[in-house]
Image (cartoon, rainbow, N blue to C red; front, side, top):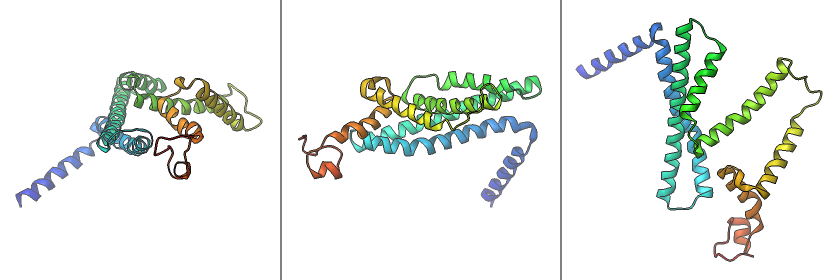
Length: 214
């Protein structure tokens, strides 16, 4: 019975610790790290699985290794960023006695520089993902604060027109300027569809199985 009793005592002690208000800030940092690991894995693993098997060559072992590496990198970086951001934010609050808007900005700037400042494929995708969303958010905020007038018509159709026009122009004439995974996706959609040999690689497969092409 010593084993179960010890576990019960340990769980009681841990749960009691988690309820202590004086440790809340530090515990929130730890849970943020945990959530970063879990969320990073949930987001990256399915994406890496699809992109690797669609666009990358190599053995099954090499593909699985690439998936695990991408998932680990995404999870680690996100967890480290959340840990850094929440830690620095809590430190600033403790020093000044209250939360101020610039606390979030400064803490995130430091975390972004330390964690996402390394120019690699994973960080590039995450940073570009965030860029598109903050541009939307800043546009809405500018309207909300009265810096720019409320549009009389929905600007989304014009936005979509320019986005697709520019990205296809870049892809067709300056593809090297686009992020590699976007290049691969667009090549599959717009260039690979120009090539076939017979019905098998017209409908069933993407590229000719025999190496012969028309």
